[in-house]
Image (cartoon, rainbow, N blue to C red; front, side, top):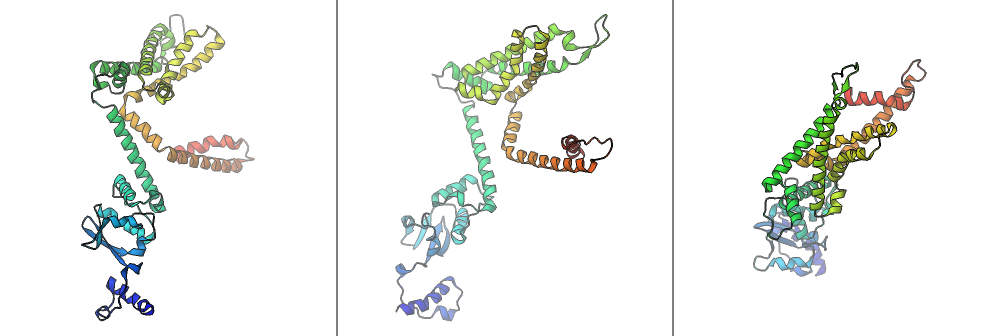
Length: 372
């Protein structure tokens, strides 16, 4: 009997899939116990769309829902099939994984819906093939950033604060979302105005002005009208200091606020003014203070706190940090290679400017970033 079953097994399987002639399909088959067969055909109904596959195809992955005995909870005795109320289009990719052993990410599908389907069937996303892994990671990263932005927008939205909200919570809501009140909106525009005035004054004070009477050399406007620019700088710094202290007081976590990038920019922008107040009148020290005043240019970065477009640009640069780093690394390698070639090509030439490989860097950089 066992030999008869072994002989008829290939014909029974071929007839089931429909490629044997009719004469062979109608041939008498010996009785076979279906429970003892490991390669019987299973029917899977996913939201009305019927699939069929071999049982041993699903048994390859016993840790999944379809490969374990847990699928019996979804078995319908009347229709003799497994019914799942899930997305049939997603199930095509799931079933293809069981058939081929390779999981592919459908680029036209929602990343979150795809992950939910994988979680339902007990498949880990780490086994996605190399051909789709990069696309999957990029889409997942974009989705996480979008969810984080939505959460931040909800937290800083126009939803009313609870009646028992503290003064710190009200101030923080006013700073993060100035449109919640008129006073917050006024302070928002006043701060932005002084940021623009400070940046413009920092530029204008270096412009040469008409010389004073009895003087031949032109003086910068910052030296000719030193009192006016000093008063203007003092007013700007006072506004910036008041804003920083109020944000520090209202911050939910003061440690996180102090360590944030915008907080460091605020401190660096106003620090030169206070250092200049305590710095003695000394020629040696005054030279260092002039160098320190360069950090006032960081006030221009304060615009990013008041501009949604600059925030988006910063997030874009942060997301592309690895790609930009690779581009810089490639450019550095090319500079070193071509600078070395230029040095040895001009070596021994009288009057050459390529006296060393580092001296050849400038020519190579300018050529690659402008003409190249």
